[in-house]
Length: 120
Image (cartoon, rainbow, N blue to C red; front, top):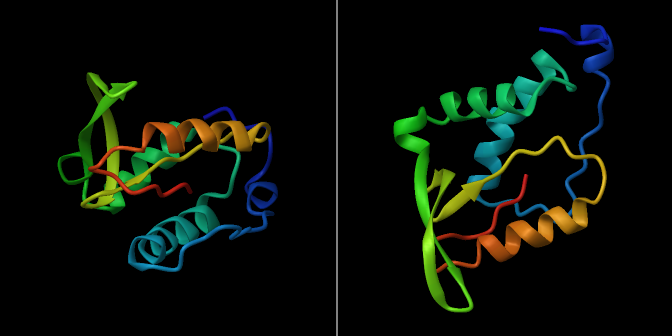
């Protein structure tokens, strides 16, 4: 791994729970993600965190599913998603800017009858 900061520096972070739902799936994410980030710190690649979270939630077979996509009410295909539990998808991002735009795109994508929105 090529990380340009020390483990101690990566472990210096703050948690913001703005717009956080304190329901079962959110608590499950906290139980998985907080110890992981406390151990590894921040600043590593998104794929490492996603792989670890998926493994801790039961693996690809348990978590990876497909959501139907539509455009103006017409079906357009299927998109892979990771689920915390049935109907509750998760997404991990390392974006630092334009988070409102990113969340808006996720909410539009997740406006399907089979998924509830869970941004984390």
